[in-house]
Length: 434
Image 1 (tube, rainbow, N blue to C red):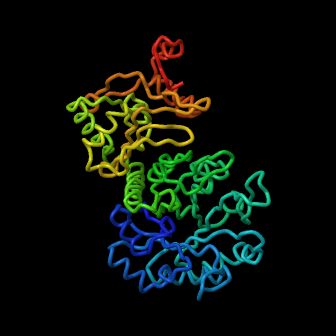
Image 2: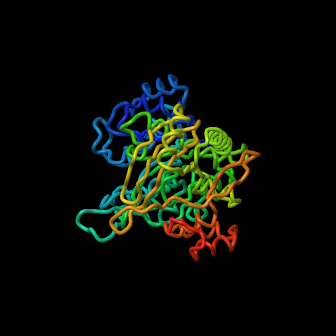
Image 3: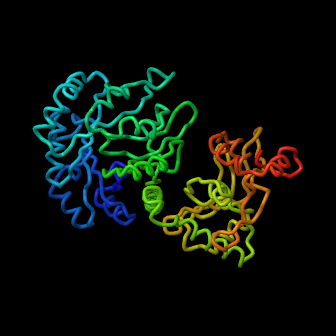
């Protein structure tokens, strides 16, 4: 399995810069989304970028609406043929196409009746049909609608070659792993991005770690199955904070690290362990108060969970001391920040692809005001010989329940001590997470 970055993830950047950032982050290649820019569809220029950055193009995505492109075929079948010609010119063996939108019956008939015949006449590249999302429209504000033809699982899954798009499945609240297991013999390409609930809506194309889809499990399953195709990280520029190239660079490193960690988990020890040992030693030397919370804390207690980043809770003063000690790793400086749910002295750091978030004096919004909600319990576990301060697992469970992460709480409960849990519930041990 090779991991590519879609140029659509940074469509607000020039193509040369996208290639450079993908190569620097460590992606195996690029997926070119054909769009109105001639840079995305001139094979001589694309080959020049491949040579300049030593980064191959692994797949090509046909344009969404070919009629909007100058000097490009206007019908979908002709556009697919042109995309296939471009792909052959740059040595690509798979192209991604969308299902018919709205009333495009002509394209729907072509896909249903003529695609397989066309594919037999043009065996390379393979045409991989992508599942599409539910869509909100202005004239129907009640629920998202099925706006693409042939998008029900039974119809889409009948195509011989499929692109499995995870965030699009998220709009339908479908588990990508369950869908993959139904159609895996036909999956030749994967689009990776998460989805996040915001009220009744689902925001698409979020970062791999930012959402409710279990992409870590899916990537691991693909690796276990010996999937030999391309998995393309396809995000929205907003998710990469593309207005700041430094943040975009950081997030890209995080995305490929996420892919590598879960795709090659058996090949090497997760890097977060070495990073946490380094941090814990330094904080103890400098007498900085801290405790590890969240998924890393649960994992250190023996719960088999994926660690997506390291969350370090402390007080406000020590959040800034933490930043000073690790100044070379700062991506987002510590500052008092708040959103609709939380307020803290928050900063983000990067240790060679391992994300670390420092959270000082955490409060949550409640009854129109702010109340403390940081972990108050503490114990010590040993990580490869290094003592690391963590919150009680039982307090993490209560925090998961308050945040309605019942699946995660259920995973942790078998590892909890009943005496500690009862002490928290009875008020015998102070906690602020509830």
